[in-house]
Structure formats: C-alpha cells, structure tokens
Length: 225
Image 1 (cartoon, rainbow, N blue to C red):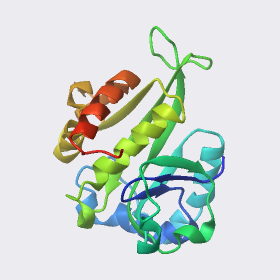
Image 2 (cartoon, rainbow, N blue to C red):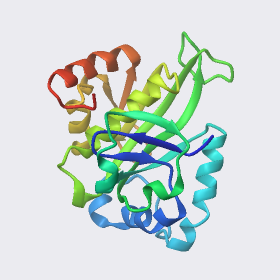
Image 3 (cartoon, rainbow, N blue to C red):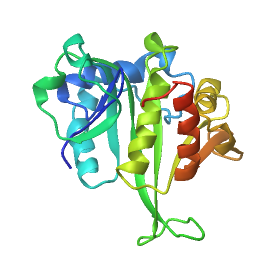
C-alpha cells in the first residue's frame, strides 16, 4: 500500500517518515503524555530502537495488518489546500517536509469477524478495526484529537469498508472518555473489568451510529465537513 495522507481542516494525518522518528520518540517519552499509558514495563525507547520501526510500519500497512500514522500541523503554504477531510494514497515526499508533528493515530488492526457472533474468523463477512489517537500535551485543548479521530472514523468506514470500529482505554482516562463524548459516542462505551492492567472502557461504533453522530457534529460545526 502506498503511504497514506488524510487531510482535514487543520491537520494532515500521514504515514511516518524517517525524519519523524525524533518527534515520535518525544511523544512516547514525554511524561505529560504517559499518564494513561498501557505499555508493559521495560527499557525506555531510544532513537536507535525506533529506527527499524519505519520499515516495520510500512510492512504492516502493506499487509493491511496495521496502519500507524502521525498527526501534523501543515505549513502555512500547505494550509490553504486543505478543503475538508479526504484520503490520498501516496504523496510526494517533499510535500510534508516542514509540517509539525503533534501526535499519533491510525488503525491498530484489521480483523474479519463472523456476521452473527462478531468473533474473529479468517473469512468473516464483517470487517472491524481498532483506532486511537494521542496528541502531545503541548497541543491539547485545541480540538486536534476530535478532528483527527473523526477523520480516522470517516476513512475507516468509507475507504476501508469497516462494519464497526473499536477504541479502548483505561477507565481512568477521563480525557479520552470526554473526547468520545464530544464526538457523540459516549453511549457506545462499556466498562470491562478483570483486565491485566485494570478496568478498561471499550467503545464499539458501527457505521450507522457514526453517521448519526457525525450529522449532529456537522450541525454544531464541531467536525470536518
């Protein structure tokens, strides 16, 4: 699969490049970003440990296993071109040389599921994905997470043909639950106990639920149009 770029009103969500590694590392090591991190304990990541990940992420995207993306603010010269949310397969490398990386997002998996039970099966008719978003603490409270995640939901349903999209977080992650509420998806969440790292909130959104939520957001001018 060629590198993906999703353009929104203020952001570009795109496949990572080697030049992004320092910014990605900072996102994963900044204590202000890690209050609700569920990564298993281990040695802290380093730039050298991240270097192989560019090729790993590209290989997973090629196999449609996972699509890891960065969230960036485009340069002033690019900003006038952003006329709503759309997906583009492939882009010119120097087009994004001067954007500012402020977060990460993407599709964590693509799974086929049984139409009746929704259990994972190799040739299931239902297709699902799991998504998420993290915005650097320095850029929070600007609506960037809502803008990025709504675009990811749009592309998951409209471009990748998913029947439902899941998202999950720790039950203590009040900011993420507030984000889902702002998107009109609070009712899609369920508390799940007994997990290794504690109680979690799981969200499962189907196409019809997102269409209704998105229509409400558009009326309030709170989402990409």
